[in-house]
Image (cartoon, rainbow, N blue to C red; front, side, top):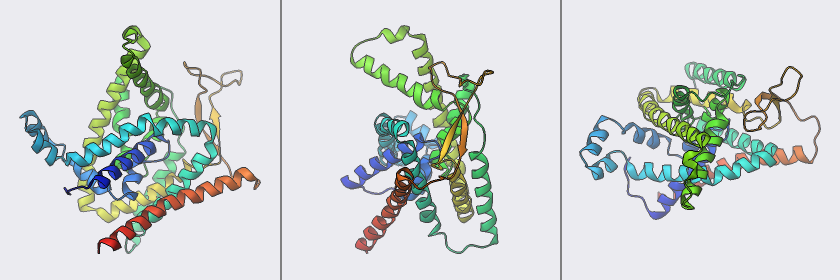
Length: 340
């Protein structure tokens, strides 16, 4: 897995991390799909698997160079750097686009996921009844998750830690969107918007040498929540990758069949044409959370009834989404034929 990387390879890795971070932020889209399509999924899983007892021993005995080499440190650190940059840049842009151009954002992601299904399935090889059953199980699980109703927000730290473990599933399991799972748990806004913004504001304050935030109990609470969530994510990332590396080594095709099915089943989550369902009070009025935001409890999906400019544009973005993924495939094939 270890290889010497040129400067352009390193830049590409950071960009792939950027893509993964952005995908993880969008409910219904999985960073694992980005890893799969961009061709570094297995290296990612096997590198994370190296964060084990031996790695900790090397680290605690001060053998940092050996630790870095053993855990495929260059690969992981460049990828994580991309994800961190993404959380403060691409994610902010995505937040803006989802608010103002929601239909087109969902359309593009819908197209990208269709492209990803083709991309992963094309190298699968021969299908038989056993793999078809695995595929069907994946589809059923994906569809079932996409129709669950979200829960209420819960800032209990044990629950937040559990959310962290579950949310990284989107990075390690293609098709399972960590941020969508957080939405179902009712903690998407708390963990991926409010607490990230609190960290952002805190950094801004520190740069301005303003430390009044230390007395802001709400800010401290949010930072505590973010720290526990990050710890849970780390625990989840390492433990899930050990399990997945084991499964991939022994049941590779079966795992891929379930993943393809799961991605196909979760298409319902990113279906572009949908209306938000809001929580209503006894008088039938929309309820708001503590920050004045409407509380969303799900979506009503529908087919567009008329072919207007908006629908045509949405279909155009679906095609663009498919083409983005296929262009990666063409780029890969072109690169490989050049090396031969």
